[in-house]
Length: 194
Ligand code: AMP
Image (cartoon, rainbow, N blue to C red; front, top):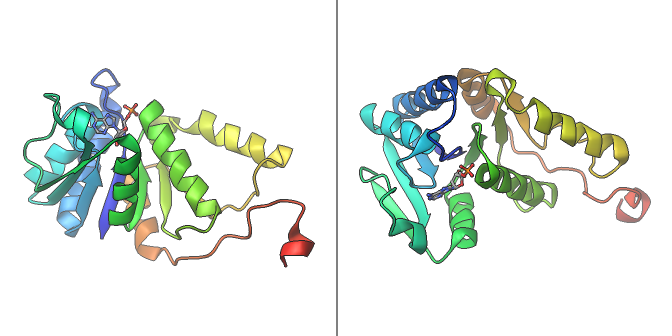
């Protein structure tokens, strides 16, 4: 399986998140899966990619031209896909991936997550998306999503994404996942849409 992981590029986050990135990388390698990710050697991104490589696994980095010129790339990637810009990078990552795991991250990670959820709710793909809620990191975001459901801003369709408390259960979820088409996104038009 090609597993796309979105995660922090920061080196300033707590050790528990580095441990999770490392565990995920090792398991990806052990399972014979391929890591698709943003291609950087810094932060959780770097920890994850190094763990995949040290476990003998395969890494594909997808990076925009401008960032690929910076000294932050992960040199040991098996393949490097250089894109025109950040938008094209997300599209390439999406095409290459069979599944999406979201470790803790900042704005870049949030943007990647919300884009993949937006495409999912519009039925543009049926691939699994899992939030890795390491040490409750995603509780505030999950609460915001619940606020959307309560307010009618999104359909409370619980299969849009899964939440896992640890890396192992996220991978178990991926293995059991059966693609399913979401209900039509628009609320209040059910009778028209059928
Ligand atoms: P952030 O959460 O703001 O640290 O951004 C991390 C996410 O954005 C990662 O999942 C990457 O795919 C993308 N990203 C951030 N920095 C880079 C970078 N230097 N090169 C490629 N992608 C990056």
